[in-house]
Length: 357
Image 1 (cartoon, rainbow, N blue to C red):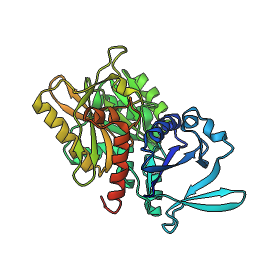
Image 2: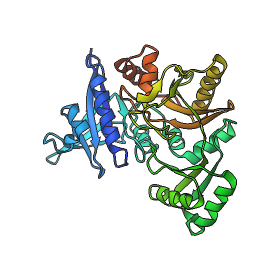
Image 3: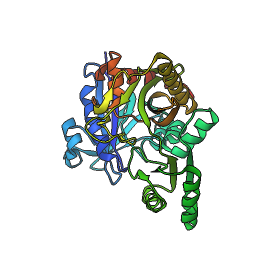
Image 4: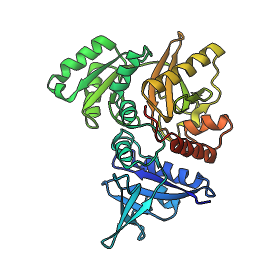
């Protein structure tokens, strides 16, 4: 029986490039070799696409870019090709692909741009589609959709680039509306990059300027003090949810913006919550997943405050997939090791390729 040709796309031009390559190396090592033929496609920090036939350890180290066997490669938007076109010494060839596992983080990767190209190509892929990826990435859109579905989030306010000439006025408005402390975030990033806590108006002005260095929209949120709960949601028409975990750090100060690849190091499974709270967290996670049109998988982060309020914090449409990342650790607790998880996600992508959401 012929192996399934699975392409892993990694790297990219966003600031999360190194996180993407580290994740890709681990995914490639854990894809069941008896079932899949892996095709590695890397995107350099400058945006060059390369077919890489070498060792996955070189992907994690960054050495893959200078491998002499790399060749220029692009995903063809023509569904007739249904694969990648490689270019070497002026000669082109087509490599057919059955399914893609995108491992890009941040802008021009997890924000719907790559997903749009894959939709045009007709190649099935793991994870959310164009609209849901964009909505998960853009925190202002996530807030607006959650508001429409009556899913509680932190009080928030949006500042756009066209309002920069009234920055001090907008910051005073945010301070009056939300109080201090506040969290200031670029609307579109795949991690906590350029995210700052502000305790006064001077810090708020500085934090907004820092956030604008990474995006043209900035979200200011009321700081939420509470327990940080995690859920892994996966599936398509009838999504399932994992047991609930909690980020608990005893080695360092609590960081509500800890979304790094190693955030699973601080994950306690199961979270010490009662049955009613667990049900509420699971139901809210699935509702948010459906509201944003997610498919394949997503990591849902929530806060549980001291007075029992549950607030959605973030939906990660491209969750970390290293063994020590939150999503795989939650799935592992349910008895699914990383190779089995990757296999399931690839199979689901193929089975549901023709579904619309």
